[in-house]
Amino acid sequence: EPEVTQTPSHQVTQMGQEVILRCVPISNHLYFYWYRQILGQKVEFLVSFYNNEISEKSEIFDDQFSVERPDGSNFTLKIRSTKLEDSAMYFCASTLPGTRETQYFGPGTRLLVL
Amino acid sequence: KNEVEQSPQNLTAQEGEFITINCSYSVGISALHWLQQHPGGGIVSLFMLSSGKKKHGRLIATINIQEKHSSLHITASHPRDSAVYICAVIARDGGATNKLIFGTGTLLAVQP
Image 1 (cartoon, chains in turn green, red):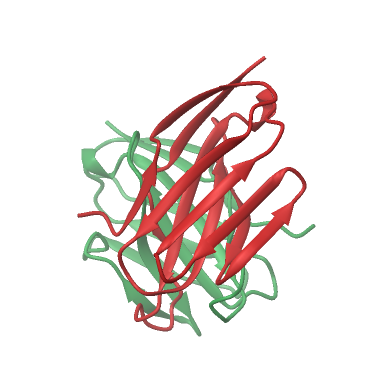
Image 2 (image 1 turned 180 degrees about the vertical axis):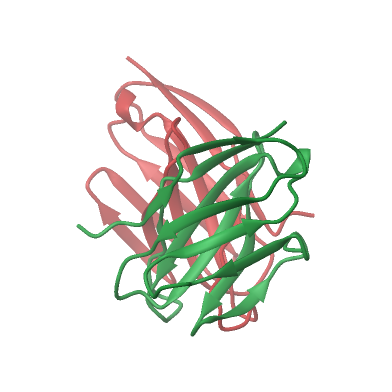
């Protein structure tokens, strides 16, 4: 069964460093998402991406964040200058168009900013 | 105020018990999802509902659109059902992106 994959599974970085989280969505999916979950809190929407551009972003997704689909398969989330509060689990998800479609989640990247 | 509320937050059951987890939401929705999150963190979609009831194995999900309420039932619970169960909705006026708005989750522990 097709699945969403994410790399790395874990990343530890120093505050102020740039990190890139990578996702490979399911190949025929058209909508892509990044969500994050701070330890002990609920999952929060960060950004959605469709047709090679951001379709919606949350208040969390400030200028330090960016997304791109560089090669038609990978979908990346970049944090330019990490802060302590960026420590969280980051989930990528993908889906076909339509409100009645299942979102398929990747296994997540656990980011720890020291 | 959370747009999606779940109850209970924590639930401990004995193996074989019938379990109900509730979800209430305050926005008009296009669809409601029930998701399962295991201790390792991965999230798996269990059901997507826009009306009525769905059943998959020992899991049953129902939704009442008028009352803005959904329930997830687990029959004949088993220790392997232990996980966090999350309710998430797609708001009807949330734009075309179909982003999920998550509840806080219910931590279920089923004891042998």
